[in-house]
Picture 1: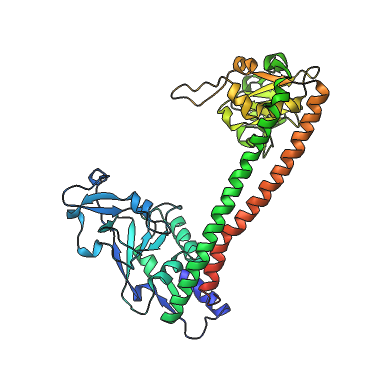
Picture 2: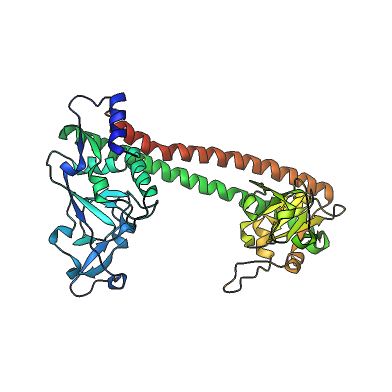
Length: 416
């Protein structure tokens, strides 16, 4: 990707406002490379003749001073490698999550330098506002360029200083830069608050299902229902498809990764040819409960919609329909009450798991069949409403998350 030519195309399509110009960063900034040091030299606390150091993990929307380490001052090649107010700090790390992260040094709580995969741009032109420039580095076109560069190189440091200095920035007069920077500060602060509120609402909505299921299975009425061990109503299926039996024909595979936590919704599957199986696969039938016993706290409990195969990390149960409603039992097994009653094995060095005999030992409060079916329908309707709320909140969150990119794109096109 040729960033300069791409920007030129965009400028031709949408000419910059009068008084703006495109100028290379190399003409307004001095690049300063970070300090190279050995990992064993970095300490959590200051020591004699040491200086604080920010590495790539400390380059966020603003510098995370708490993530600093301390290194010997002797590692600095010049005083230029000590941060100054107004410096633009850019991460050049070999990581999609970190490459291109940038911020402006708006305050300096103590003398501080920066690591090898961090580059500082120090303004050499008094007609450029550092906050304006910092916002520019977060604009979608610049980030897209950084990601493109990262994808096309195998160097340890994907983003080179020469890549950065070649970028052309749309530069209005200084007063206009300051106005845009101030406006973006206000807008992005509002977006950040909205984002935090939306995330809190979404997290609260995620908890509604568990809270409601607890209300159903742990209340005065439920405690008066007959107590029955799951082993009395669940019949384990132990039919296994082995490759050495030379099975043939198509099948549908549903693994743990294909079941949504808590809801029992299937979110995927894989079509397989049984003659190509490389490992044994348990077989389930339509109407069975397919239960993820590995990391059971994930609540991956699915009622099979068809016949198929699953992973060895799942148990398969046929419910005794003369005693229990399959949907009612499945909702109970997704409920926090089940997890509290289940003797889950948390042996050191192993993932949490539960054995078939331990599943069988868990007690369920079981009302008459008609009431089980009625309760199951009520749960399904209630949790459908909850899922609709979650979907709406997720859409709202996605819209809020897209706002910064829109605001930045408009601002640097002279539309802000």
